[in-house]
Image (cartoon, rainbow, N blue to C red; front, side, top):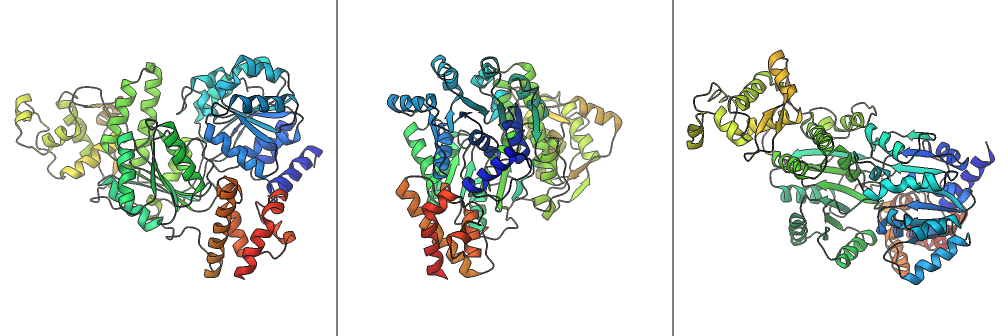
Length: 603
């Protein structure tokens, strides 16, 4: 083993308390330690941060981490400080005096890591400071923000090419958890990483149970899901609008949940207070728009629920990835409807994006709708979307309760023909009325009671036709246009289907949706011995008291996973405790005696 690997492994064990690296971590770290540029794609919770934190500790100088969110910066700094790492941040929430003090530490070489926003990094005075300092590396976190084809494009990120121009010999890492092939290519080109190496770990998060269901009564479905599967857990509920966020949070509170709202329209102080409560308290449910969550490090989020569909699979994967970062079981529930799809398409059409970007966004939305209506393994579809491979997982709703399918060839032909015969400018409800032969004044006014498709669909009920039309949109045989009626029109694929008369199997509509009941037990962190569960709860209480004393989130002291191991193995000495994953030297010095005492009291 090289001296570089020896040093990295020593830091991993002594500072972080982990026995060995996971996946390609060791290879990435050695590559960066040798001074080379790197692009790293790892799933959320896969250990990306170690890929730049450990090289920053190995190499001479300060590691500069470009991060998009102030909350994430402070979270990381708190966690690193607990480990004994000299870390700081510079951001707009700090006083001028604090910023100046941190700059002096950078100049003097007294920091291991400093976190900054891209806007800060690009300031002339900050770039000048970096030229006066010894830099170990640049780490560009959430690198998908660089790409216009990514799901969270941020213009300032595109200017980070300045690092290659002004600091060509300093290794640069770009890291993300969500990027399809075009986005990955764009990141590498924009950040001038082509001469470096790309590491793509598997996208699979096997600890997450995925469930997608048709929306009926969204709030009641979400409440039933929480009550049945997560009555004492922290989680996130995503909503499409600020109004829905406020209303859902308030309603959940009336139902006995500890729920808080979070959206961009709130006062910054209120947002910050709610986020702090979510990070530092147990059993909080954050009801939020997508303004919340990127980079949130809270490892014990046990569920993520979507009340509306997100805009694409990348966003869905990233948002659900905020559950179960500690590797313990977690659940992801998404509710969807055709109306959601219409709203998302409307957002795309009304945006100021170039036509080429709109076309890509429409394709990505269609892929998400395909996931919603799929009759096969959800996880397999997501993995294949990102260019990964996988077998049916046995841990999603379609694997555990396979849907019934039927030969929908004739039904699809009737639906497509009906759209065509009515000039391809009417919405789903109108087309269904035509297919069912409904005596309607509007249908008669347009003369559609005389078309050949009038009344030819009476073998299916209205709800069944709605399901068929959703699937045809998901399969990209029909698309929603931007007309005043939100009309459905045939795509080139739809036209080809009618001509070629291929067999098409569709998912059978099975009635009103019921709330998802995942396979996991009510308490997802389970113990074979009831006494171990009581010890785990006692240690969580002790952890919370320590966290409040230091004004930090509880998980920066120990993750739930570490507490679970402590509860099961019950070490009786510091030496035995040092063998538990996540117990590094500094944490053992600070907290070892406290937790050994809790263990002794419950043994």
